Length: 236
Image (cartoon, rainbow, N blue to C red):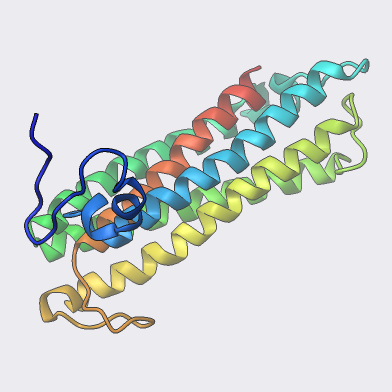
């Protein structure tokens, strides 16, 4: 079996060239945009962080002898005088998942160089993320008003408050950062920076619509993490 060949580079046979092959991004990641590769590496590391949070939550909930609060009661929202379990959380989830769809379509129109549609869809995604953060702020203020704190909880186990504010706060921070960049890239698209090949604000490299896809990877990750938070924290 012949060794694989890449133009301009000759791979060494067997295991002798493994170190040099792995260390060379021009051979290992040939044809892959550097920004996209770096984003995947960042998302992988962030996956470990969120996994640690959720695992610690499950460990803490499973080991406490005190009764854990019922999410259907804690996160209920009144509608027309009737308490509806998880109503606000359902709306938050719907908004965030919908924004993931608009982000995916924005990436499509970006590669088609349809500036108008790409820009409007990015704006819709940013507004969806902003709406999510606003509803999460309302959720926090409601629970704080009811007496939930990181060190205390009137509904049951005291650990509930610390896990809730830590996990949802860390995720909300990610969403907020994503919203900021969505507004920035909406401006860049409408201003025609990618058609003009204008350089970025913090780099000498010229911009390209692949940046929209990289931002989309981050946004889809944030949405996916919320699905796990929704399942483990609100439904369990």
